[in-house]
Image 1 (cartoon, rainbow, N blue to C red):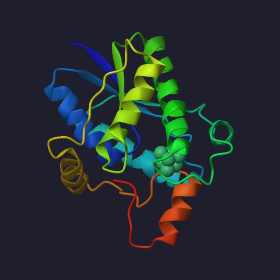
Image 2 (image 1 turned 135 degrees about the vertical axis):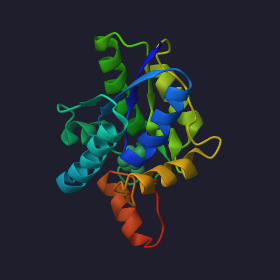
Image 3 (image 1 turned 90 degrees about the horizontal axis):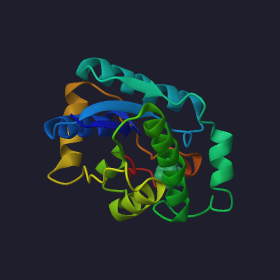
Image 4 (image 1 turned 180 degrees about the vertical axis):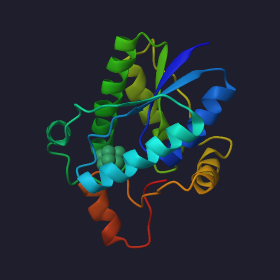
Length: 187
Ligand code: SF4
């Protein structure tokens, strides 16, 4: 069975990805690599939810302990004021997918992909471009939001009582979310 490393942005998104990848015959390992999250409390809440999900679904979980927010900030420097969905996000995708691709290669896994495509706020063609540019052989382009993927992630998050955040991840998305109280930019 083909093996896949799933870049895991958060537990609700990962839930539907695990379900669908397994239905397609893949063996899934989760990879929590989120240097975009600068707030340590938020990082801990998201990681705890991913641990909870991994245990519930008996999915192996790897945590990218060496991913540093300072390095992520350096990667997006100059793009801090860009709106969500713009060039800052493309750089952010490249940062996390680059680390995921490197880990998949180091582990000898067949593929890598990302839970980011679950979110209606994430532009799937951009994610596919970045994934293919990172490693055209290993990248598995799956648009998990298709066939009601986002709605399914909400159902599974309720079933497993998973923490659901109301902003994407970085300090810039958090500030934007608080300026537009009531809008949600994350799954
Ligand atoms: S809004 Fe989300 S995808 Fe965009 S840079 Fe921030 S954390 Fe990354």
